[in-house]
Length: 340
Image 1 (cartoon, rainbow, N blue to C red):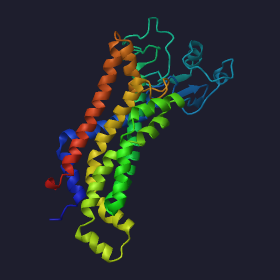
Image 2: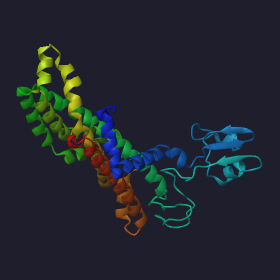
Image 3: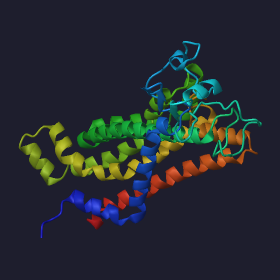
Image 4: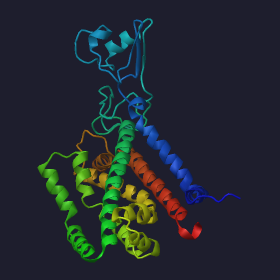
């Protein structure tokens, strides 16, 4: 019988955890679904057939004169006059399933905002008349992409710092440890408040500030693995043969130190999503025009009677965090040496 590789055995153990495996499939589906948010939820049609020609407003800007209008500015595809022309005779316009973008303001609501769920707005509107479903789709994508970016930067930085500390040890490790102690004592929230008052809030600014502190927790685990592995016999043999330090660290020690790194990835990502949501809720995150889960929670707090704002956002946020936790638990069991 052919011996299975370690990666295959780990994947088999991961699939045995049905909760984690199906959570991974469902989370991947949701992320791919949100990745095509412009096609699924937009106030611009994705396809127009007008007077024998085909037009793609999602990918190209067309002036109103192209469709028989009077102005050279971009066409307003929700204007009744424009819709009448686009749907006349042999012409046809195809809108996304949800004909609202994240910043589309419905001026024809006919009721006070925030408006409750209806046939035109399945999850209602916020206090500015914007569609909640559209902002949830775009906000979920932003949160996941931000979580991926922050997790990637923190993981790479943590691996590098922990590997240098653990492999070289001695004075290098001592200096790094004192630096980490001083750096971890910095008031992270105060720094965010200060920078938010100096610079214009943006996703990039929040990503940079959180990346400055997000690597220290992982560095401790990698440092411990390298401290343990540098005294093993195969490492001493490689040094005796004249193998360089970088080669030993990259080829021999790092693969054996990746277990805590991989198992902590979903938990670190859930923490990154929660951090962005918290900052947006406090008004220290992304600008108001950018859709985010934290901004919707803040609107739900300000409009406590609009239950659809808080309920829908909490379901999306809690559901995302639960899926990531289930994936992390399955990874931890799959990489458990006792199960190999």
